[in-house]
Length: 228
Image 1: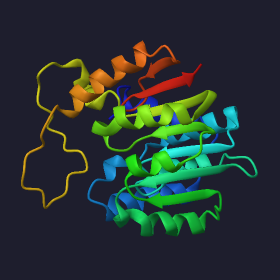
Image 2 (image 1 turned 180 degrees about the horizontal axis):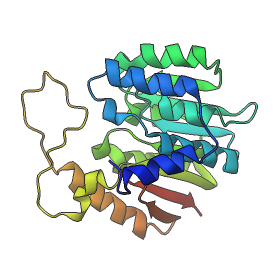
Image 3 (image 1 turned 120 degrees about the vertical axis):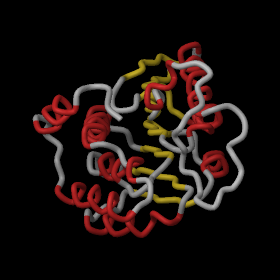
Image 4 (image 1 turned 180 degrees about the vertical axis):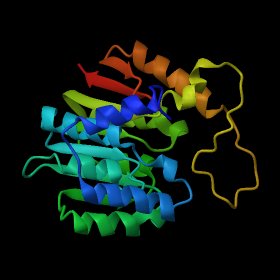
């Protein structure tokens, strides 16, 4: 979802420098072969991530939520020599598409890990310079608490989908969006809604004295955090 008129977004994409035909093919294949293709990062989001990596020149990048790899590849293509990106994905079904395009793009700077991010994050070292968080929305507060101590001083964290289709503005309205829900699930979701979790999470970031934050309305919202 974009909160800016689509033709304006297309104009911005067309007038930005980063483009890659293989990533265009990945986008098409994602829409053809996955059940939830809307989870892929948009072109303008990919251009933004690529630009941020070029600007900040991090040596260690972490992504939570690989999906088919679009955002990971946008970042990896901007990394300097010897820099590395670790990307964590909970669903192994997307790995074959990721690996196909990793090979086509000839990228050897991505460490792709399949598993539960909450279990993998504690095993990582404490020198991460840049984080892109796009995993399970209800686990964002837990990811954040685990990741902030591992983020280097003045390191940057970007958190995706924090506007959740604009529903964070609403109160007590059940979400009609289902987040990566298995087709075999027979029980309704328990606990707070995604928008309630994200509303509280955005407030948590605003009030965290260990960081500076800026909520950017790109696509479905990106919360930008700098560790003091």
